[in-house]
Image (cartoon, rainbow, N blue to C red):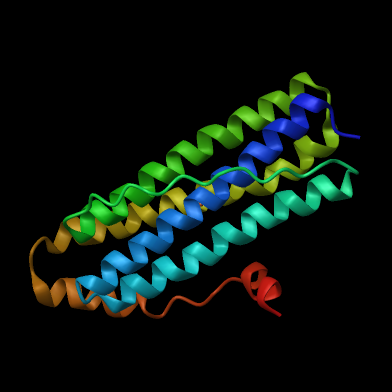
Length: 172
Ligand code: FEO
């Protein structure tokens, strides 16, 4: 059984994941607009990943016989002018999300909720990967700068991204 503070915090995190999904969807639209379709594809898959993260928490609350509440999801900031700014926004969002996952882990510890603590470790590891991936793409974009051929090659590389199994499962 989840404590009330733990349940509230997990419900809040569902909202964070869905807000993150919205931001990635907006970023996908931004990259479509500037004709970087590989980046748009990458962002679209990330959008699906974030939805899957939210659903994973939702399912967990149900598994623990808790009560799910869905809140209002804020519209994302869309103030990006360059590919780097788009991916920097993604990285900033992931860093913020990592902090919130960390806060959830601390709460699970203080509530002596070992099940939720174990459940959250998947998210802790996921955040390491998500921050590293976004940083890697920013580094590549910074390396090529305004060179259109370099940007085209990065775009081609990101077009190869394959949806991870958890998003496939959601779609089946
Ligand atoms: Fe659900 Fe990108 O963290």
